[in-house]
Each structure stands twice: as C-alpha cells, then as structure tokens.
Length: 348
Image (cartoon, rainbow, N blue to C red; front, top):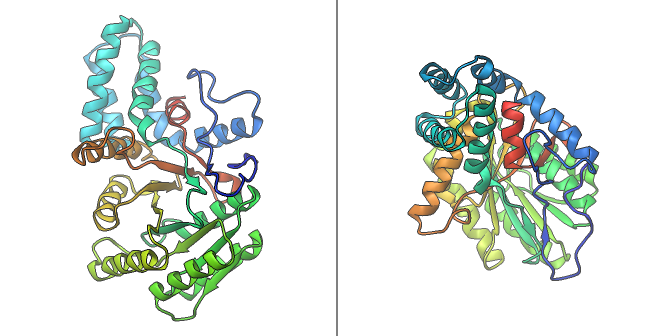
C-alpha cells in the first residue's frame, strides 16, 4: 500500500501528504519504481472506464474535422464536465492541434490529455500537517457522500505515517455515525472524543482541547451530513467552525468537503454552496468507480480557477485543491490526486 508519509517529521517540522508520483508522459502514468502506484492507477483507470469509454470513442476515426469536435463536445457534456469547462477544453484543444499541426485523431487524444492535465493541475496540492499543533481538520459533506469512511481511511494513512490522531464524533444526530467512527478509531488504534446526543460544537471544542493536552498531531472532526439548502443546518456548521477557533486560535486549519463523484454537476453545486458558507480549503472526491460523470472535476477546476482570480489570489494558490480521490471501499482505495494520472486514466 502506498503510504502518504515516509516518516514522522521532527517536532515543529511540517509533514506533507505526498502529491503522488509525477507522471512524465501519458503512456507512463506512474514511476516504475513504485508498484503500489501502478496498482492504484489500474484501479483509477477501471473506475473511470464508464466516463472514459465515451471520450475515447471520439478518436477512433481517421479525420480531424468538425464532426470529431462535435462528438467530443457531446462526450464531455455527457461526462458532466459542464458547458463552461467543455467550451474551455475545446478551445484549448483546437489551439494545441493548430500549434502541433496534428493530422490524426490519436494525436488529438494525446493533446486532450495535456489540456485536461493543465486544467486540473491547480487542484493537485498536498495536504500539509505539522505547521500547527495540533492540525485541526473539519470534514463536511452531504448525507451518503462517504464522509465518515473517508475520515477512517485518511486516519489510517496518517497513523501509519507516525502521526498521533484524535477523532471528534461531532455528528451527534446519527448514532450510527458515532459507532462507525468509533470502529475506525479502534481499527487504527487512535483515540476518539464522543458524546451521545451532545452538541456538535461542544464535542469539537472538547476534542481540540484534548488534542492539545495529549500532544496530538492531528484532530479530525466528523460532522453531520446535510444538504446545502438546509440553511439552519449550514448555520450550525458555521457555529462549529467558530467554536473550533475558540478552542485553538487559527483553527480549523483545513475545512474539507467530501463529494460523491456519482453526482456530477450536483457535486459542483455542493462545492459552491459549502464554500460560500465555510470557505473550503480542500476536497475529497469519492465513489469515482463505476460513475460516468468523472468529467465533473474539469468543471470544479474551472470554478476553482475563477474563484481564485475573483479573490485576487494567484493560481494555483487561489484554487480549492482535491487532496484525495477514492475509487472503492478498501483503505488503499483512497489516494492523493494527481492531475496527469487522472487525465491519462480518463482517456486511456
């Protein structure tokens, strides 16, 4: 299993969750010296097969003509890339084709991989822990997105990297959520702060205080799933975030949204709504296996780019990164996001 952490850094030294092995060319998606990453790439390619098959079929002809671009436009829209990202990618691809003087569809396919890679590149950033003691991570999302499971998988990788992790069961509305998180805590041999029927803000406050007292490296707070249209519940998330800040100045250091890759453009709407409420710092995209809507990452990338520019930030630092993507239920099925890897698997 590929580990996010090679070793625990000395006290005070930040630890970066590796951004994955760089992929030098579309035909070589991972470093041959890291067989675990090859295994992950195979899973990713398999998971994106439904999305990629319709895109790949566009390039089976013999000519580069208007029909090819029209078919590609339809395939991108069906993959839920969205109108704006589709238009952006088509314009960028036509520019690349002209500059490269490409003459066959296979070459256009390679150029599309480059275009998608460049669009997604700002989303590829490592999650860094260790700059704060503890690093406090608040995890949010709608019901059924895979939030608690993603926390469990992330905890496993952090713990295996030598990080001392404390979990906060702040989803106090659903008893099964606390039990599920407690199971993950037991599997990973980490501590958990939980209160039956308690106030979510109180649980997170106690957890952060306990994390500081116990010398934890990371505190991860699970929260109740909710729809962004449930305004009173979204306001509660604001309260949880404020209370975390009272428990530790500057916290939470990361506000991560878990989104279900199967929901397509609805996932983008969730990102926008949760960002408006909480100012997201990162994303975890789950359940990409079996979906035909993997193109939504292109839509998210374009939105993130525009968000950064609107805030006056420079890209990529203004973008909301995709820290992890998931393609299955196993612990090893959550991995760091690599833009070229994703683009190659999508078109491969």
